[in-house]
Length: 175
Image (cartoon, rainbow, N blue to C red):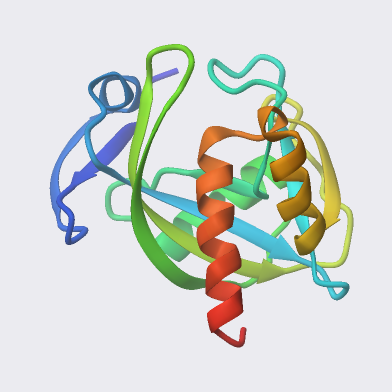
């Protein structure tokens, strides 16, 4: 399988190049990414546990799905594609905001992303792709906040950053 390229961007989200994903993470170069939060009618977020065979952050809990846009793909198209690939369902997504973060992993790689955060709603069970996802659960937003404080080691580095941004966005906006 050919490794996906990521879209290198400047701080204004303007494309400045393409690079293989692993190389971009080794060099900690800023690239475009997205994070999807799926909520149900009880205001719970669908979390996924990353598959045990993932090359970084295996078995850690994170948001519903996240990945990188492909060249020529809109943020919504990318989020919808990855949601179907990882969680096995489609739903309408809406982009809420974007921000830049940098987060090192234990294995020497670094996420340096201009992350587009999206939200969608779904009330069914997903059909997870076991190559990508080990497990999933619904969790109330306040319970996630408390659990991250109690046991941060079970969550991905980026989820802790992105969830904090998402949480504060929800405090300031009606969605």
